[in-house]
Length: 249
Length: 328
Image (cartoon, rainbow over all chains, first blue to last red; front, side, top):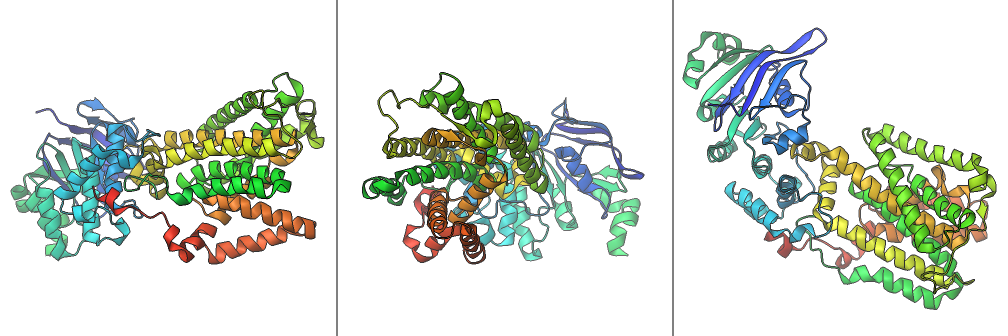
């Protein structure tokens, strides 16, 4: 199957420090893929290069078969690349509805319209409400994000990403900072995401990774150590050594 | 206040400025030229609120557009046969828009202090050009003898400033309608998004830089229009329309009134110019002290400006979000 997102020999170095070393990576439509690795393995660098926030030193990034290595972030988003942030990055003073609606308006090309009031764009508000409903936070549509529990703020991140109707969704530690008794809500919502979206999840919570992902890539010191289904990763001795070893020694 | 959850209908309080302005016209006929000056600075402050209050662009160079507009109208009226006020206004608006587009495209790639210094540099350059190009601008003596025809061929600018007052009021009204539309539109909501969190706006696919250039150009157009009005009303233009001082004045006016509130741009210039006028009569040397104390008070005790204080004391005036509009 044709990959919806692909990197070819992606490299990034800051002076003598190599943080991404010839990363070859493929994501197929509808994939549920996890990227794991110890701290400093280069996961965030990799995501930032995928999104266009960081220019790679060499190599290629292909989105739906097209080379987007030099394409700016906003154009990649419009071509179907969405993300959530590890550190909640929301419009804290705006209601939930507006948080989601702003993204939908960009996708629909309505964001530059200057005459008709935003609140009369019923189609955008309706669509925003469907995502909020799907994630179980529709009752809070009029609440300011800042007044919302942290776990729910994480869900707003996902709602905004869904509003972009992405082909590929990068989830950067969606459960980061969420108390463990609430992370179940995140996982159950992730499980309900539309099956056609290819998802790459970066996550430290191994429980979540092994339950969610169908394939796992292990990144160590900027290069891919191994890529395999979860069962094999769990058995892999090298992975235990470099990664799980830290926790289970 | 704006955005997808806001109620875009005009509230009764929003008609107050217009009622008050017309009341002022009949009750204080001796102060109409002061009134016209206030209306012009409201338009100027309104243009600043668009970029500062809504898009979050901090500038000390907004007088560049105000001054360019003022000198455009002045040069047309004094040196050429183009003496129709609306034509002069249109030319001033067009040139200011061009300057806004050209400078915005360069400086909006930067942020914060760098941006602030660049905006200041641009108006300083224009000030120096106006100072040196005496054949066109009159230099330090200013440009007098600016000819302006009757408006629409009917309303002559009179000695008491009646025509000038209504002319400025009409232009301000149009400016207010446009700004209000923009603020409540998806574009206005998007600007608020950039101000609130530009990282997030990038991540939902907004070409943030171009959007900022766009609003900067719109704001420059309005500021240039305000500048042209000032020239037409005074039939004179001097160097005091350019440089740091008028930029600072309009910024202080907006902060006094309340930033990002639309009507802060109405209240600020009224208070500032009335205080300035009163103090300048009493203490011609020290009137800035009074403005300074007022500003310190507002910054220390009323961060939302005078409008913020009104919110606190008269909560029923607060626009607020309509629960009805947001829930569906």
